[in-house]
Image (cartoon, rainbow, N blue to C red; front, side, top):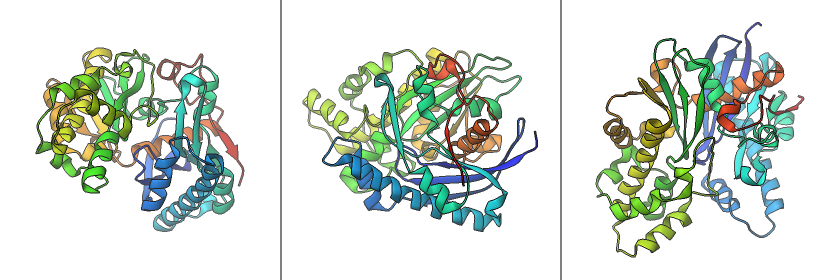
Amino acid sequence: MQAKLFIGLMSGTSLDGADSVIASVDQHQYQVIAQQFTPYPATLKQQLLALHDAGHNELETAALLGNQLAQLYAQNIEALLQNARIDRTAISAIGCHGQTIRHRPELGFTLQIGNPALLAELTGIRVVADFRSRDIAAGGHGAPLVPAFHAAIFSSTDKHRVVLNIGGIANLTNLPANSAEITGFDTGPGNMLMDAWIHKHQGKDYDANGDWASGGKLIPKLLHQMLADPFFSMPPPKSTGRDTFNLAWLEQHLHQIQDKTVPEDVQRTLLELTAMTIAIAVTQYCGNVDELYVCGGGAYNEALLQRLQKLLPRVTIAQSDTLGLSVNAVEASAFAWLARQTLEGLPGNLPAVTGACGPRILGAVYAA
């Protein structure tokens, strides 16, 4: 099959903005041609955060915010096309993840907003969206979906690799050498709790390089309390999100330990929570790993990566750039690849990862 151009568009649980790529995709090759980032305005981010909790008139709010997201996505794509000097008629489709508002696979649903019909209208490009619902309908978690892409792009014939995405939630893909036994799952909070805590105390969106956490001291009682959350002891397949891990969850644990805490000590402990839950997951479910490649915003948290390296001393840890794909481009790239899978009538899920009863063609198509 001849390579075609696809746009992948991702806005994740960190709520920092929309990442997009233009990629040339065929069955055996993948190449990013251009990428673009559009930050969320502060007001939009706060409205999206508020929508994660039940509230007054939330159906109308979700619809209106979905329209705003479609407008922002369209602006992002316009800038992407202009910067790449590529005409929209050359694009086969946009793979749009949308913004997750609720993720409750145990109740049989997930919700990503972004009005793909409006996005198709605004861009004049076919849109593939709603990738997660079909997998959930087949008994899966609808997440993570990126392991199928990781397997296609990052597998090695002689190295046992793990691909780790640290966004708001952290998820990993286990890629044993020369093996079809690919697994993957959410390990727990990535940046989400650290971002929420530093925003509460310093008004910052994230802890650059983990500097604030590095100045704090570990609170063992708090760490032990958080690690006791049932999610961490659940075997895969599993997925999670803001429905479980959020500022209220953290503050509940702080209340339970009944100790006075210093904010930077809490931040250090949250960093440890992310690092430990990732390391435990790798050790428990991935076997003898040779290499671990990190992508997502957490790849820039030097303190977190250093802690991971100490917890996994025998594993070579590097950013995904080493494999030729920027840490900021991996998630958006996955949805360009998934859009192609949809249009070619090929499965986009891995049942061993999501727990679905079989491979499924994912996504709904909105014609231009």
